[in-house]
Amino acid sequence: MSNRTPNWQLPPGVSRGTWDYVSSPAIAQQYDSFIKDNPLVRLDIELLKELVDQQQAKQDEAQVHVLDLGCGTGRLGEVLLPMGVRMTNVDLSKSMLAVLQSKIQSQHIVHNKCICASFVDIAGVMEADSVDLVACLFSSLGMVRGRRYRRESLAGVRTVLRTGGQLFLHVHNRYNRLWSPVQWRWLIQSRVAGWSRGGAEYGDRVYSYRNLPSMFLHIYSARELVADLR
Image (cartoon, rainbow, N blue to C red; front, side, top):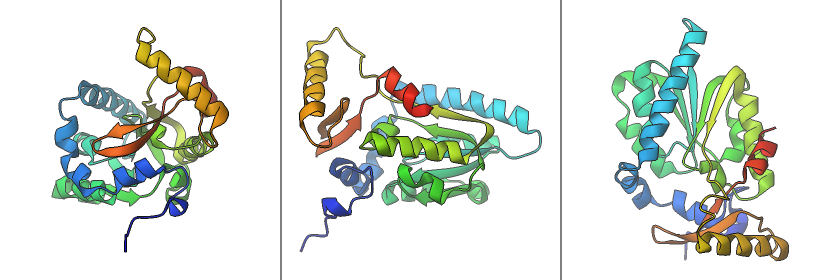
């Protein structure tokens, strides 16, 4: 008998492709080597270090609390924990969190917390007004299926952020590469699917990724993102 979770039991906002991704121990074990040469990783780290410096300047003696939403194997914590912050790492992948915990140096363990949860549940697993800086990178928010659930996720972020806190968010741009015929074809197909297919939304993309046949990603327009952040 198969142990595969049936679709009707998947958490809210989690597609079959996303569930298969977060359930794969192999993907977790290979994740660091897979992303190590991505220039976006280096850019994210440099920008986040600047934001942590800003928060620490405002906090005086208080310890800055950083929430890494969709933390993966903890590339942010490896850099930010030595800066003296307190980290909370949230991911739906137990395998990713296990890799993360194996990498944390002993002196930082007391300041590092891992929570296995979906983005939609963030307000239920975190205290309100408890976080100074939220990072949600590598288009992790776009892996949430359904605008209702993406909005719930962002509402949860607002709940846990303290006054003066910051959200550092990365999503993919729907209208990037408009010079490409492939991009135009996808835009047309996505628009038609949003009109005709139950549950599909304009900007949804389903594609093959790392031997997974139905990886899901919602690709934002600037207008949509601004509206959802309000």
